[in-house]
Structure formats: C-alpha cells, structure tokens
Image (cartoon, rainbow, N blue to C red; front, side):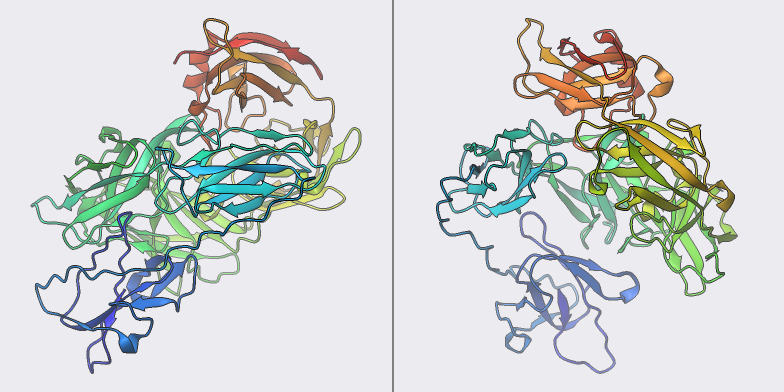
Length: 636
C-alpha cells in the first residue's frame, strides 16, 4: 500500500493498493509526485480497492493493524519515505515478513486410540512444512472434522475418539501450492475415501501438493498502447447442466499494471481461456472504463467460442499477449424499487441470458445511486437478463427478486422500471416409513429449472429450514423449480413428494406469485433402498483403480439437471463401486475415468450419456432391489 508521507495542504493522494503475485512481486503505478510511505501486511491478507475511492476491504489472517513500513519498521514514524517524481520507477522496494509458524514435535497419542497420519510432500517427495491438513468425515452420524498443520518433516496426525470408526477424505493446502487430497488423481479429483475401522490406525497416507502454473502477458489497445486497470481472468471450459460453459478458475480478476502486464497464478494443470474485462463492476472490483472496447478473449476476439485455449503444466508459466477488440457498446439504465417502494441500492446484476447460448455467464455490476437509479456501462450487443435481489434472509428465504429480459443492439436501453416481488413459499413435513431421521442429516432445495428467472448471482438456491418435528419451510421462490432432496443419511431414499395429495416428485413447479405457494407438501422417505454394486475392470478383466461408475436412465427425458435418476460414484482402489437410492426403473451402468466427473460437477451431460450407451450394461431395478453388475472401463 502507498500513502502520502505526512499531510500536504490542498493535495489528497488516494490510498493505492497492489497485490503480490505468486512470486511475491508487486508493482504500483499511477502515483502523483511527492513523498510516500510504502507498507505491507505482516501476514498475507487479500486486499480489494473499493470503487469511487471508498477505501479498501481486507480479509485473511492477522489484523489490519499488523503492518510493516519500508524498510521494515512496524511504526510509520520510523518508516523511510520515498520521493517519487514524474517518470520515476522505484525498484527493489522489498519486504521480509514473518513465515507462518510450524508446529513443534507432538506428544505420542494414547495407545488405545486410533491414529490417521501421513506426510505432505512435493512432487519430488520432499517434505512440505506448514500445510493445513483437514480430516473430513463422509456421511451422517460420524465423528467431527479435525484440522492439523504439518511439522518441519511434513508429518500430520489425527487422533480419533475411542472405539469410533468412520470414512474420511483428507485434504491439504498451503500457500504457493495447489490444494491436494490423499489419493487425488487430477486437479478436479476429490481423492480417495479412507475407511477406518474402530481402533484401527491408518498411517502413511501421504498427500502430494503441486506447484501451481501461471499465465502472464501484456494487454494492449488496438493502437499498441498498454492498458492499465483492466481485469484479466482465466476460465476452464466445462459442461454444466448439459451446456458448455466457461467457469472462472480463480475467485478474483487480476488487474493489469501501468505497463499493461498481468499474471494469473495459482492455476492447476490444464487448458484455460483468458479474457480481459474493461468498463465493468463485478462485486467489489471495478475495471478501467474504456467505452467502445468489448470483453476480449485471447488471442484477440470478442467471441468466446472463437477463443484459443492456453495449456499450462505445474510450476511453469505460459505467455499470452493480446489486444482489446473495439465494439459498439451501450448503456442499460433504469430504477429499481422493492415491494415497499423503497429504492434498491445493491443486488442488481446484468448477465447473458441462457437463451442467448453464451458460454460465458459473466455478470455485469451496476453503478447505483441512493434513489435506486442504476446504470450498466460498456454493454456489448447481446441478449441479457436483468436480475434484482433484495432482503435475502438466511439460507431458507431467497427474499424479494425480479427478472427482466433485455436485448441490447448497440443503442442505449434506458428508463427501465423494476419492482421486486416476495415470490412464493413452500411448507410441509418430512415422513419416513420406519425409524426416524435427524434434521441435520437432510437437505432440501428448490432446484431452478430456468436460471434466467432465478437471481442466483445473489447466492445459491434456498435450503429448507427443517425443525425437530421434520416440518420445513422455504420462502422467496421465483421461477420454475423442482423440489430436490440433496442429502440423505445412509440407507434412506426418497419415495415420493406430494403437494396437496398430488404426486409432484419430478414435476416442474411454477413459483413467483403468492397464489403459487404450497402449504401442504409431504416428502416421503423410505428405508427400502435400491442398490447396484460391482467391480470395474479393464479389457483383460483386471480391476481398475481410479474409475467411476455412472448410472443413468434409459428414458432420456429423465436425464435432466440434478435428476434423481442419475448417479455417479467413485470406485475404490480395488475397482468396487456401489450406487444406492435410485428409483425403480430401467438403467444403463457404465464406467469411466473418475477424473471425468470433476470435484463439483454433476453428471448431466447428454452427450456423455449417449457416448456411454454402446458400452454400458442395461439393468432393470425393481423396488428395493439389490443387484450386482460388473462393468468395463470405457475408453473415451
């Protein structure tokens, strides 16, 4: 951070913020002449400069007051001011900050306690100290998560409660490395499940952490001059809800410096699309305003479908220079009010409509006045949806919202008037045929069918508030939805969902108006659970390590997003898989490389299903049936 050294009458120097990259380097340009102080947080913190000179936001370890002033003092009075004049470039303004502490030797655990232990290591096998390791139980009714920090030799250790077994995943992360997990096969793989019997230790569970890759380059305008303050982002191309989409690979845009240079770091090995944004506000980030220039994808196109992917490998840097593309842009402006007629001063977004077929769902942020008037600038031609969200409450109430389709053809779209509505509500109860379930073991959500009509930019779809009597409530629902049980305890499956006595288990329900609310919904659970298990083998009949089994319905109309008729599970190291809880019906069972599933992606790709049919086994799953199906790994 750079600030004026001492008060100067009549001159106000805004706080300037620079962020270090993965090499620890920073560059802060655009300074006015004078004497300045340069400081850094003693512990790494994420810093965001708020638009319109509103200050900064920070988060991370340590405190806001823990700063070091160049050349190394903790007090500004002992700092060494630096004098800058026009054209100056002050180099080697370096800092040394304290390294994170590494745990000392641990005492030996009690002999009657099970231990889970291993090391965090690099790709060369050398120990990585100071990694944060998490032991996460899988399934309901298990032990609580635990955390540890690897010591100087890379060792971590967890001690389990007496006579308690469980199934876990073990993950680790450390600055300057990619997050990793035990048994991880690739960057999107969640790793192996570790099954620990009661009082039985598991050791030598080593986790390999890889050095990240980076993409660096320079951004120019169409005359060859560098662009300062554009936001550069990296995306991966994924299939989501059966559509190819660009998904951001990191959480924040990287601003170009005064020389037009950028560096997107922390990337896992793979293929990336790089894009530069100007004239946009996204969250707390504002890019430089350059009317007449469009979002540009490497190597220099405003069409994401024509972009060129960049391949990166661990610990290496790929280089990509490109220039912004000129395009006719427009303003989208209007006024937004809530149900009570009060002006809305936040929660307004413009994004490409799903109907447009755009593969990048980049969200535009608006400049908003206190009276609710908003303005989006630098909007290229296209089909958009304007979404507003207000008064979102906790996780079960999506608050007030509204949506409006906007077609931008190059001319300004102004004088829009929008007012939110409270939407619809859903209330009911959950019942089970035998025994009981705990509210904490259940997760119920109204899954959107048409994202254009649901303001998901403001947060994920609601999750029902379930009380101890298993009564539940949802509110603020807009747009068509399917009610979905997203989490159940082992040995329990969904049997039916009824609204006012009518089966709506797979129905698309319209929401938005108060008269579309449902107040008598019954969700019926059963312990009569179906199961399909077996072993994945290769072409020689040998079990395959690193496979996944995919079960999907023969009826293609049941292969919709978040369908209860579709399941994908990882096989264990011996190739064994088990799929539970599918409804009775006709299914295909196929096996693929488990890395194809990804860490957070559902199995809902129509093209994937069709490619698997030829090599899949076809089975009939009856009520509460348990069947065994051996499948071969499909070479895709």
